[in-house]
Image 1 (cartoon, rainbow, N blue to C red):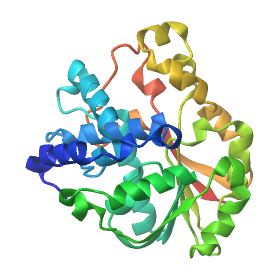
Image 2: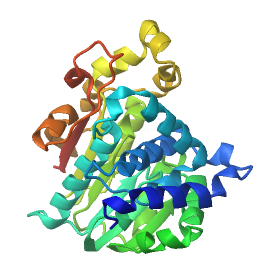
Image 3: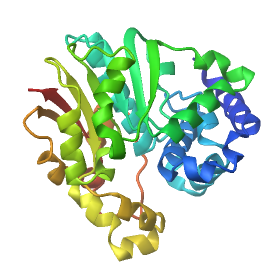
Image 4: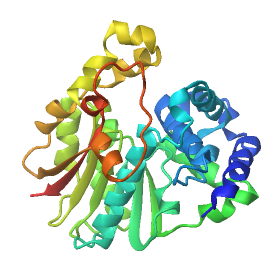
Length: 315
């Protein structure tokens, strides 16, 4: 992994070398969410004072979104003191939870990441005895595969798998949910063994009915777990507030896409799954010694609007 004096060199390589994002098809293939999230992780990792490394994120984000996030960070005082964004903090928290499930007493040996986007965990997390399955819409899966294949030479060491194997499943869950388990099994997934299902930044983009169907279809062999991030009702209400949108126009785009908050989500998981732990990411930052950036335009207590992650167990 890079040491602090490598941060700038890797970021420059990622930004200057990549041209894949400029293909004509990209408007159809990529989403605002996956590019923004990768860019935020990349820009946070460029700060050598922040103990956080994401060497592939800049390449996967693309030049346009890297530039936008860098401008936002440079223009905001809240980011100039070794602080980390809530997006990167969420990634760090899920990293730790994945490692705990795979290395801890549960000893899970297969992970299913739903809505994988530009996630880089198979290239970062040291779990060589774990089979990793990424699920995303076909266009996104294809794009990510091409980006990994075309990575510039200085970044190639960071494309070596740190998991046992990686299977990338091109599947649109909204249209072909019934195909999830058969496709997993066809790629070597053991439906009778425990699995960890990871849904980071996914369930609040789904309706209650879609979440209900998803959790009914998830692999749930005895000993299986799920890691889910979800937004509190206070945050969903806030982004829909016209006064807030006037100050922060990007919420006008986000608000219509967020369909489910945590209170609603709890009622959709059905009888096959139980929520066993809820972690407020604001509290997680304090307990882990991270300095979390705060948006001064948010009048509410940041703890009240912080995203949560849930640990769930198959029943």
